[in-house]
Length: 293
Image (cartoon, rainbow, N blue to C red; front, side, top):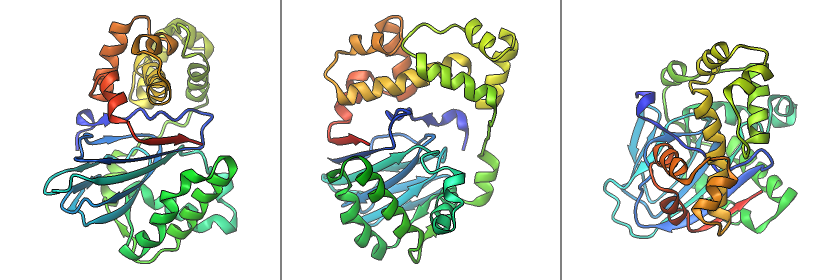
């Protein structure tokens, strides 16, 4: 699968969020094959005949399914042979560092650590597990704050000891496509962009921040992340823009300026290129129950 043909989803999660919960009923699947940095747990009900693509695995699904997708694993669902006009989709996304390696290294969390490690290939859970998990997942938005995080951990704990879990994408696919860019300079650059995305940020400023020339920094960030400096900055800005489109009634023009874009025309152009739809279409598509914890 050619990475150039994939869409990187800019989720509306910010650094201050633990996870987001989204529930909606729809008539079809219309989101293209994509990937994102976050973990995703997806419950789909009443969609028999739809086609699921996870990495290099493809299959038609039954009436109910529950799938855990790891960071940067390409995935999508397509309407295919599904005739339902009332597909229920519940999605939980959380940062890949919400439960970091040090936290998960404790003996009591070994099973969850293994679950998350295995999710880099995508995991599909049995009907028995789905029937047990579905009510808990559907009610997770009834809790708030700390209690909701505990609810998520309890769900992950149950999934980690579930029987008949199926690994979807192949190990060879993961090894061929996985990337890592652990770097203090990259971390420092991204931390600065996250904190200052609303203001103009120049390449010269970023290069100076990490003690590199502009040319060297441009090559460095492209090599380590696969994105140019401008693309990296725009991705951060778009994440906040998506959040505002979902949570607020600000106009598209207001959101474009609040997220650091210098004009609405440029904002619309970048948004369409990255998200595959206009800001207004995105806002319409995300009508449903969305909460951030």
